[in-house]
Amino acid sequence: MADEDPELKASLIADGVLKPQDDIEDEIPADLEIYWIAWNMLRDDRALGAMGGCGGIYYTAISCYARDHKITGSKFQILLALIKEMDAEYLAWVSERMT
Image (cartoon, rainbow, N blue to C red; front, side, top):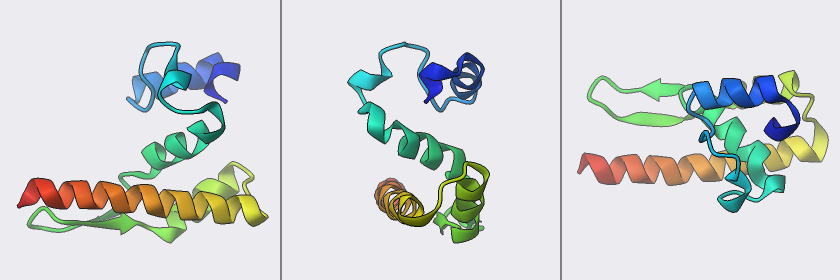
């Protein structure tokens, strides 16, 4: 997706979502790149605790992202499930770092 739109790719690199290298497909299969980009775009849409803890990405943020990118039906269900799974891994990683 980002390879087809140079402006999007440049923006994602500037935001730290993508690495500047052209061989991102070596790290993430092309058909899964959309989910990695989505999670990175949404990763800060969460509750942050006063003592450093954090909650999961809000459903409303995922839903809004999907609506903005015209992801509906079963594709939305897949996006939701994968974002939640990726976020659970992230939260586990954060939790390990805090102990």
